[in-house]
Amino acid sequence: MTTVDKPTSRAVYDAGRRMFQLLFRSLTKLETMGVENVPRQGACLMVINHLSIADPALICATNPRQCLMFVADKWKHVPVVSHISNTFGVIWVARGEVDRTALKDSLDFLKAGWMLGIAPEGQRSRSGILQAGKPGAAYLADRAHVPILPVAMMGTETISSNLKRRRRAPVKCVYGKPFRLPTNGRARADELDKMTDLIMCHLAALLEPQYRGAYADHPQLKELLAAQA
Image 1 (spheres, rainbow, N blue to C red):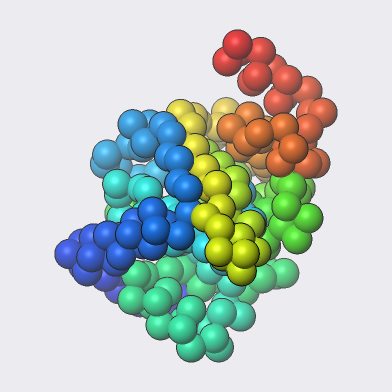
Image 2 (cartoon, helix red, strand yellow):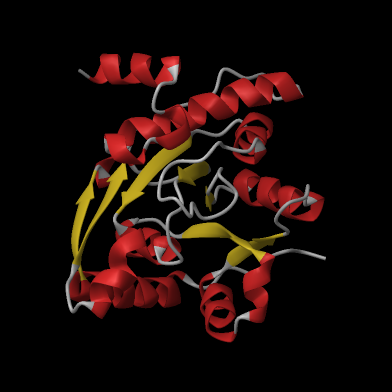
């Protein structure tokens, strides 16, 4: 049994994208950077930090490509979220365990040339800072031999509290440059752990310092920041 329904048509996706763009422009002070870094075609794994339930909508609003997002299957039982998710097309994944069906479906979509979006942290950060990553993203990138597109979001965790005060939250979405892992398609667990650190450091390099969390002092982050200087 597949973990995803057939992805919606591009026309339906674009209509939803315009709706989310209108919402973010009306309700937030949105700043988007680096959209030119998004590969216009071909398989790609997009990795994001995860601060808010609004994050997938922000990706839809800012990403010029149609993208399938991973969503925890607990949201299947929340009518509004479930309906929107199924309309746009998501890969439902069981959180806290190795979901082999979701992994297989993900590899199939990557082989077919799709862009998939995943939060390597595995869940929203309750603290608002980057948490330790899990190896799922590294596994997919390794097995599918696809480039990784890091996307950092900041401010989405404040949208709700700002709206209660009738304020527009400052929200930023930064698309980094795609990169590839040093991989042969058969990485072992210890190698996947190192690759996960590399992925998370690429994300941390796009985030403002207060969001870098578990990777704030990581040597690979310091190398990436030095290379950007």
